[in-house]
Length: 465
Image (cartoon, rainbow, N blue to C red):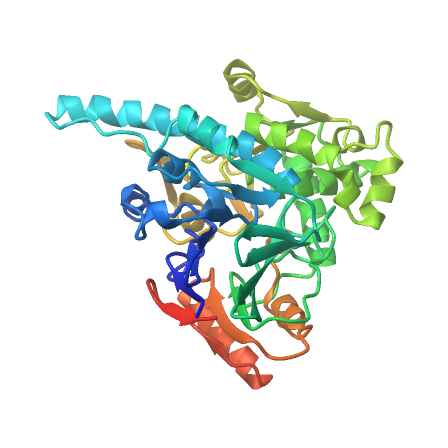
């Protein structure tokens, strides 16, 4: 009998990792990084809790690092089989994993300088650029809705999840002894109010459902209220002369924000002279979005088509790309009137931290939090009202105005999750993953009130399919 073992995203929202086994074949569903505090992220260095040599194939729902980020390590540790994903995911993976390898190498070099001074042994990076290149050579892009053979007795199909470009709900079909069983992994389901992408596809049949629960305990603020707040913040910053800083995930959230700023520009409501996208990875991801407008929703495709070239850049003509370090540093001279979008989304690294150093202590500056902030991250501390921000050995006073715009989330809200689950014709066995404990427990109760039994698995737990 086939079974699935939970090796990630059981205690929180990151580290997605599930092993699916039949009597003769094994596939790995997701291979994500654990993200959060430094102590939590140290777990990424641990050996995989399964025999890599027994894995016949890997299936990936989308490119975000909490779902894909340990694939290069998997390859470095000996995996050499196929890795299946959608075509846009493959293009995003190349950008994101090469960037992650660069950061791994840089951070390891810094850490080793400190370790040598302390008389400690050097450490190795989690993976290298060579490992990423080897990983990409194993990747195969698959079209949405196309059922394909993953390995003997196991087929898969990707359905549009509407979360980021290329994101998928994964259907796994397992054939044993003349009987077919179906496991559905929701991946990260998109917010139906978000810009550009289509709503998550409805799935009608499953024996087992692995359901994300990131926002299982709450609904997002209505989009019209969120857009009104964004407009008001921009007007206030324009009036008092402050800069606006937006820490944003390079894939998904950045493109959403650019589109929404473009709407304000087209309506004559954006008074700032320039919007700076200060992230090489986000720039590359935005250019990939331009190439896959065939998966955008019809309403926003029509809006973009009214601009000069039908792209996000032409929809927001005041958008400026800052690719190099020198161009990024030049933004330090701007004292007011700029909107700066930079990574990382949870403020754990990247160029946004350097912009914080220059702006966070100004009372007329504004910080817009537009995405989920995991526990233990600097972004979560800002949301929770921290009065200081740590950058290495330096402490920065937080006097800027901090705004949380939850309506921009790329994840389905509680109501949207419940609505999506209601699309199944028969009730599958449900297992809640990718959520903090409170979110999973609240969603479990809400599902129970509607007659759906949901289980909360623990790390290492195995279930029959």
